[in-house]
Length: 317
Image (cartoon, rainbow, N blue to C red; front, side, top):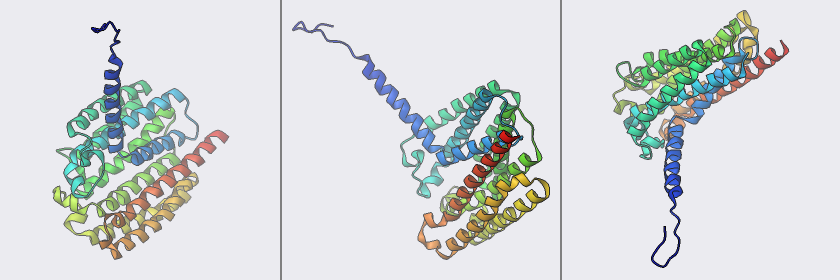
């Protein structure tokens, strides 16, 4: 293009593309942030533990990678959907995630869940029929947790059942992607850690979200019977899982002690944080969520020790 003075002006369509690319990149980043990166990593750890729990390393690295990518898409889909359906409660609770603070439009996030579900099933199909079955089950459970008509998040009982299933399907997807089969050790590890999620994580999470849950019409134990009842339930769940895990490992599958010991120690930590939170309930949401943070650190530690121990066993075996 030449202007009136005879100078050549070069059009710059690249600038428009740059703007669009940055906009898309920002949307992807916000969706990833909304879907709780710490939780995403926890689910990928569960998958990895499942993949090495068969007593050998995965038979095909490519299938394992595809399976992990499939599960990751399903996890982001489920938690992005949860953010879309929880926006009112999150704002009441003072959440700073992108949808609650207004940086990510609900409609955009909803469209993202559809794309992620399709990507999850496609990648799972490439990894094999067993992987796509476990991934599809995870997607169904993720929908049941947040959306009508099940909306398991509104009831402590339904929530515990669905959360247990979400944990179990993540481990199952790892087993399927490895090309191996369930072992006694793998089943015990998956059962203990899924119970830890259902009986401890799902309850302690509610301790910091009572106001928002009540505003959203939920009927959790913390809302219906009060925080004291929820704390008692959290303590009972932590002690039950913490005591059962090492006992079952010693009786049934000693290699599972790599999970059982951290869980037993973590259960005591959760109890301490629950009791401390009861004494300092007026100190704010951060203090009330102390028990949930103890739950989260414990599950990271347990999965990491299990992954290390089982992977070494597979290499040596």
